[in-house]
Length: 139
Image 1 (cartoon, rainbow, N blue to C red):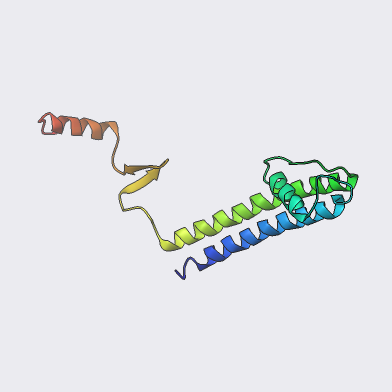
Image 2 (spheres, rainbow, N blue to C red):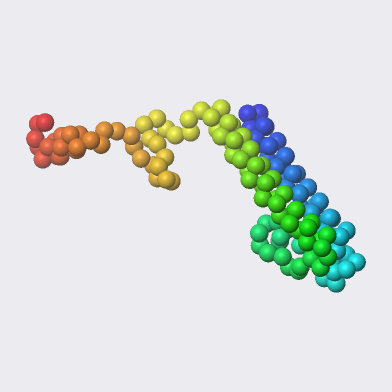
């Protein structure tokens, strides 16, 4: 469990950073739009906008002010930079944790696209020898 601690901390760091991006974008959008935009009645509407917009699902409503539009573009660009970088860091931490644990596969087996494959000699000569043995040929 102690070996996975850095990975757990990294997952928590990434989750907090994602949450901060969503909260800051939602708060910024709320501050810029709440007086002019009839679709925003409270901070919850702005946070809903933030989540849907930054995850790429789409905007539930449009910004009506120029500042709101600029904030929308800035928020989307921030998400386009932060999310891939943090996911790359998370994958790196997971790979480091996995390599620290040692090989996860039994010896003599490898993973290929989700399928187990026994390692061995699959050359045509080996195939001919196994075919000869199966027919009773001595090799």
